[in-house]
Image (tube, rainbow, N blue to C red; front, side, top):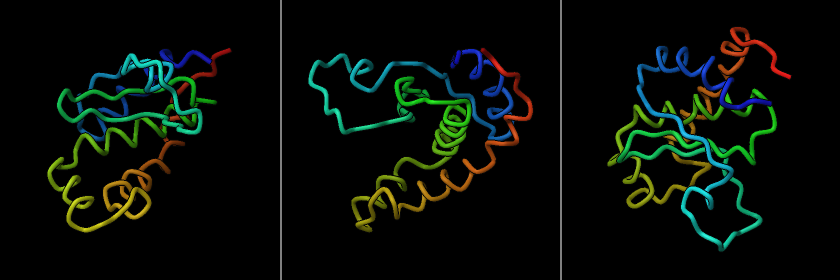
Length: 125
């Protein structure tokens, strides 16, 4: 699976629909991005949004198929439109965790629209 080709094909559509202009970067995993040797084998991350640089990081070791790539792009695009201070306040002042965080719930809800973008892609292989 060529993740960069999938990104090149679907992200312009996602970007337009979610009115976002993030840069998308690919790394094997978060440890490669952070350039650290200490690895927690149980920690799995598909992607993350970096608020300060307006970048979406996709972690290719976790991507098993086109659906994973598209869901991750949608999820992080939603975060790019959310307010960072409000996002952080939910954790610090409301005591929510990842599963109950309203911003995460919104991003996960939007992920379900991934099939709309799959219809516009070609199969690589």
